Length: 327
Image 1 (cartoon, rainbow, N blue to C red):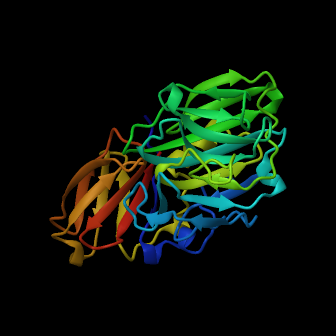
Image 2: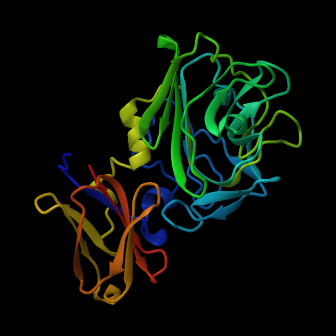
Image 3: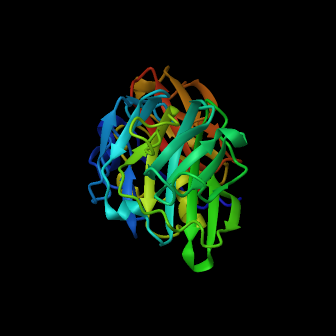
């Protein structure tokens, strides 16, 4: 596994220019981007296309890295976020990609909705759900009724963050499912999955096929993106790993983390004020991989067998964290 270079940036609330200034993170592909909802304090679309969300009960929550007000939580009974209809959101008969992070607390018995834009009747929209009738496997379906649907074998374990992407390619008549950055399923669509036109609003966290909604999500969502093209496998992986971070985003005022390719270690350099505080290291899905106490202003952590995005958090100093990417 090659680890040729390291990029890092501060994830502190006060020192994170990319997300705090409502600018697209550099790892988000901009070509044919329809919408990007990072949920950093609001439900705005920061793609420049102004497909802003309206809150209906959903509340700000911690994201997969434990950073407060960086995701939205849904109660499973009524909460959702609604985005007004726009031609670009209907997807039409072209290639497209839908990607999102989610954590499910409890599955709905019938289905759990993530991103939905469909109206009543057949062939009138599209939806991305976990199907309760099929062990909560992730499913892409065009509208309601007896319409075509396709699902992969991947399902989210409750209580854990997962990243999913559904990619379609009209040119080769195929649909692809990605889970945590890896392709897990593909299938020829037979032309059945490219009719998702609907003028209904789009929702995150619930269905839209009837006025009151169904299939409510009990859990959280973050970093939702839609593109009017097929993303490459590398682009999907970058979304999962949060890579391609530029050097200009380093904020050394808080701390620095670099990867030593010779020793396979992360080197943490912190202000003297941080000495004696606890630190924790989380992977891209928010899973704790290492923790301890800073004994000096320079700490070395073994990381030879890890790659992708790691978040180093310092506690009890609130909000202070540094993200490092190991290619």
